[in-house]
Length: 238
Image 1 (cartoon, rainbow, N blue to C red):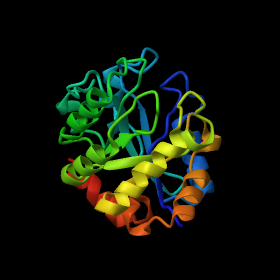
Image 2: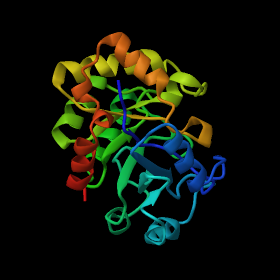
Image 3: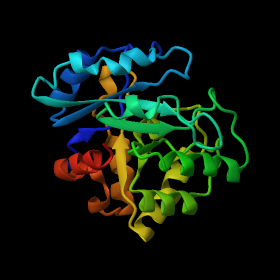
């Protein structure tokens, strides 16, 4: 499976990450990627940049080392009503918006409440991807999630870090398999992101690819396999 983009990476702007934009871009170029998304955590996580950080992306080059750059954010879901921590005006300026449930921002509730939080987040017009919906600490109804993702034209993320080294997420592999089976059943698109917090992980999607290939998951449902499909999806969210 050939992937052209890494849709989820972090930089030193989030101080629990350790590489710069340039270091991430160089790593992406070395791995032969065409596209790289910079998606630092939005302000609700304590060590994240101020909203002005996300308003200043226009100062950055659109290409580094031959890699097209996408400047966005990993938005935080703030409550079970799916509120997000950057307003629509700021999100409209971003190339890509991921929305994720982080238990350091909102305490996980019941399966119904957690599912509702993600479903309502999908209904924000700018949200392109739901990040790492795989943590057993945050139980969800995967069928409801998959069906709403298809209706809202939102991608569900297969998070390589969840499969490789995110030890604090439980039952991630099992939950990703459940989600992927339902995505194949209903024709719901997914994205693969590294969730890299250091340059060495940028573009390293081998764990996710191996799982998808093991399952025989259809390549046409993986947005990263097509530059054109990914760019159209993001354009539709502007």
